[in-house]
Image (cartoon, rainbow, N blue to C red; front, side, top):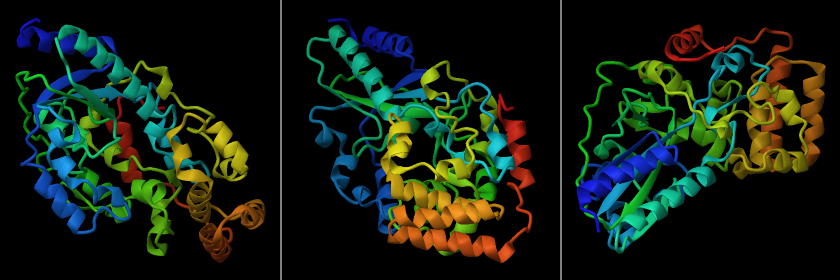
Length: 373
């Protein structure tokens, strides 16, 4: 068996060979992070995500989640494609605005396969490696391990920021029983900046480093299984799956790294699709066209719920009003309520012009992004 220093060096080389931009090592002590997470849940900021209430001991003690674990390999994988064209949908209310990570393939399966292959390669270096891979799939404090291992620091929007790569990357972890030397954390470099807080459409970042999921557009359009609160609907604009505004506002994303992985390039024209065209999809089209997409998991009804709100925030027309009315036959009770809200909103303002996203955000994006059409 090689010495631990050599193994650690080889792990980082292998990670790069499998496409990861960085791999760092952390111990399993969560004492600096878990109490804050526990309080966040106790305060109800997790909304309906009841899975965050369960198995808290496994989050606190990684070696209970996977026995013998003494180290966590934390890895990042870039997903921002070239010519991201963020401002297209932001400037055109009739287009669907979908979070950038969801425009291509589902990252869960893609990253998991790469982690599994990496772990198998690491096992060849060791006599008896005990490991388990994770990609947002179990009670793991993934941002905590990324933070303490030096992948980056936790920004005021609670995402990990890397000074050389911004925040457009996925995280993955490999729990191992190998006592490698740990990497050092990096200093938080958010300073006095509050751009993410100031430009959050719904005020979901209720304090630096604290997000109330119940106000967050990503939560409301993805994890939320209930009606979207009426008082927040207008603030969603044309965002129908997730929200990138806090990342778009972040000055560190001027250093974002572009991915070479074509799997994260937009599919089905989702980066330029009109709200109406997506609204007209049948349930079968939804599941067929979005096969292999992370969007598929919210289901057709929540897809309709989200688009109904976006259409209600757009310009009124006879075609849209008719399309909304006709879709009621395919909608459940909750979605019908959103459809009726949208119709009422459109009728109330008739031909009134609809404002695009705040010019401050658009200017911020043009300034911060390394590639933007």
